[in-house]
Picture 1 (cartoon, helix red, strand yellow):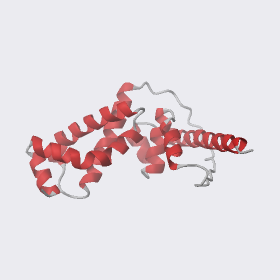
Picture 2 (cartoon, rainbow, N blue to C red; picture 1 turned 30 degrees about the vertical axis):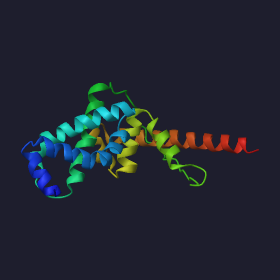
Picture 3 (cartoon, rainbow, N blue to C red; picture 1 turned 120 degrees about the vertical axis):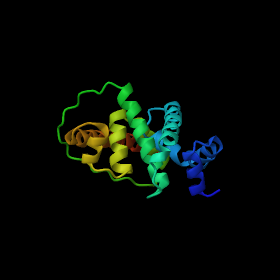
Picture 4 (cartoon, one colour; picture 1 turned 135 degrees about the horizontal axis):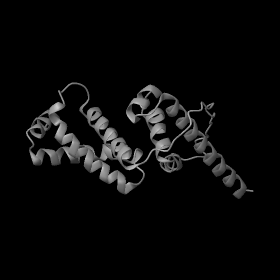
Length: 180
């Protein structure tokens, strides 16, 4: 069945088509949930909620642009909305920090380690970092998405980068100390 046929059936709330759509895209969208969730279990919950929202909103998709991109936006918004409703936002000063320069030797730091330390960032920092660095949103867009000021977005990104830099340097230092 083509994706257009599948979408058409999902718009008619065909359960078998919805199941097929889920199987087709879940493996691509789950990493997005992981990126914006505090834990694997929360990512699973967010994934289920996002697909429920996708099926509920299916009539809004007008067959223009990337269907996968449309679903990805729903997944991100679902994760961020759950974060907004479950977390009391901490007050963060809007200082503007100079962004730390980070040079990474790919032979010394693995992608898995980078993903692991990004996942361990405080939720707000992780979300701003992901939106800015991994998804390419501007600070203005992030401010609108997360309902924060542009300055807060910038300071959260700077703090996230500083934490990541410190963890990478610490890891490299420990690695060098072990090899002595």
